[in-house]
Image (cartoon, rainbow, N blue to C red; front, side, top):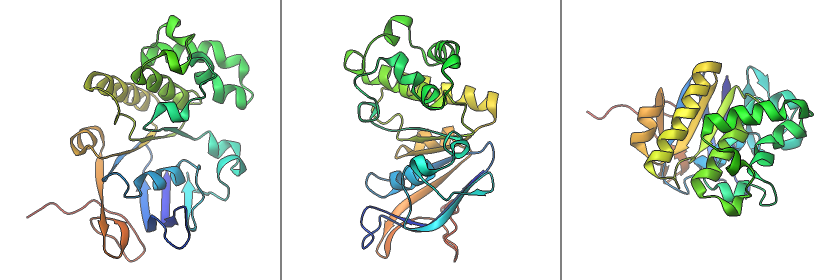
Length: 239
C-alpha cells in the first residue's frame, strides 16, 4: 500500500533529520512508529502524507510512484491519504466552524453535494453534537477539536490514515474514543494505518506491528534491523 524507500528528508539539506530510511505499510495493515520527540518520525510522517518533499528516496502508494507533493500531487493520490496531527489548534483554521472544518476537503475537491450527509455521519461517529459543530476552534476543548480534525481526515474515505501523535495531548477517555473511531473506520473500509507516537503501550495494543526509532551516532535512523537498502524491520526481541 505505502512504500517508502531510502528516504532522506529534513529542512536543511546539509543536516537532514531522516537519513536513508525505508518503511512498508501493507494493505489494511496498522503499523506503529515509536520514538522520542524530535527524532524525525514526524518528518517521515509528513513525507508519507504528501506534505513534505524528501531530498532523496522514492515513495509509492498502491504501486504508483509519487512524483509531486502537496498540491502538485494528483488528486487521486492526495485524497488516498488522511492525516491527523498532534496539535489540532495548529492544523485548524480558527475562522471556520467545526462543521466547515470537517467539510473543507469535500469543498476543495468539488464534492459540495456530499457535505450535509457526510458531515452529519462523521460528527455522530466522533461524538460531536450539532451544537458543537457550529462553534469555532476557540470555543471548544482540545479534545473536541481533535475529534473534528479526525473527522476531517476521514471525510474523503482515505485508504491510508496517518495519525502523528494524534492522542498525545488528550486524556485517556478521549484517546480511547478516537482510537475506537479509527478502528471502526478501518474495519469497515480496509484502510491501512501509520500511527506515530512515543507511547509504546498504546502503539503495541493498537497496531499489528510496531517499529522503534532511536537516535544513533551516525545520524537519526530507525532502530532494529536496517537492511543495506535502508529497509526497516521491527527490532528483535531482547534475549
